[in-house]
Picture 1 (tube, rainbow, N blue to C red):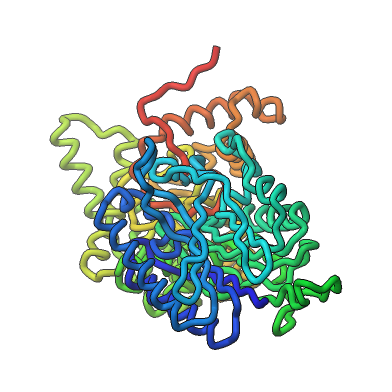
Picture 2 (spheres, rainbow, N blue to C red):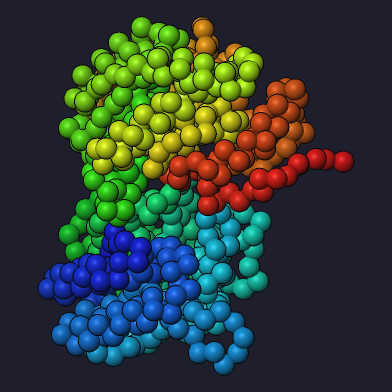
Length: 566
């Protein structure tokens, strides 16, 4: 039996386009003699479809997709297992839909299995739309018992979130019934920690059920979420037979159960074209691939022009954005703009110009000094008193945001924000200024990670040596007042980032940080800033998810609040 676990890059809501991608992949599998083609969770709708699921017309159109696939199966020998939704019969109270896996073959619906565990933590909110399915029964296929699990059914209670404890175990259910093969359609978003964890879970479940497993995961960018694929087929010992290339449309193929089901002699499972599975990627390579894919798909799936613009300041954040933008859409489609004032250093402009030359991107400058002076004078005339220092400083950042948005409106190029996670966390970024943009590609990387990634890119990235040494060695600065450096206002980033990681990724408070050896005064300041600046992040650009807890849809925090302890 030849199994193919394919990962498709589908667009949320594009039912016609997604159907076409499914049919193309299915036709190729059929021509190449594949017995079962496994596709990802909700591949017909894209993941996550969110409130599209609340509209009856959308559900009706999905049902038309099912009928088109069933009819197409009449002409194909390859069985298709794919993720989609099912309209639930309203015989008892509950949600109107199931998150389902369909198995069709030669005009027949062999089985429909519904997802049992509906995640509601992090970016997930499946219980808002779906009803949990009942315990599933293995499907009889060619003398074998084949189990179906859908994404979270595999992970069960292995996610590090309090809200992920479930009262039942779909894996145990299949174990008690006995299965010879398990097929898993999935839509598991990427994080820097996820791939290794996912591989460990697949291997552990395989060993528990003592049978081969085929796992098909979505690939592509959907707004904040990036899906890395990582589709895999493993044998009953947990050994990888084949793994799809991550971050692109691909598939994993393997021959399993090549022996006669009636025979006691077991033959080894094989890959049809033996090849080594991809080696583990360093986190910097994963970040590069994820951000690049996230940017490209954001533009494509939003029907935007494949070109980017941003403010290039001579600092490390905008420098790494320059490299990522050039890699994502090509240097010829990138515009970097320097917007100096009287507080800008000569190095800011010269370093930016040198970086632009090395990358081959367009570089322009626009002095905003006159606009800054006019805005300040006008406001002071209105208020009849000198402006506060913070107001004066932020005028510059907001003028830069205004100019960049005007350039974006005029040219059709998408503006991307340059804020990192450290600055966003403590409010060291200006709302409607440097936070402006369609997407925040590095908004989930701490400042120290930005430096690490930049150094790696300079050595191993698509444009080696592009970032001038001076950008690495100069003290970080917003350059909004004379001789300003970040650490006048912030703790050293090596300390700040470790405290933020504990508070954001692990949920620690001040006392927890003190127990881990951090200064109480510093931890208190960070905790206060983290919570008092939530209103900024609520209005920020969508942040590409790279970490376990990301600002945006995965972190829902009240704006009007005051965290206190007793």
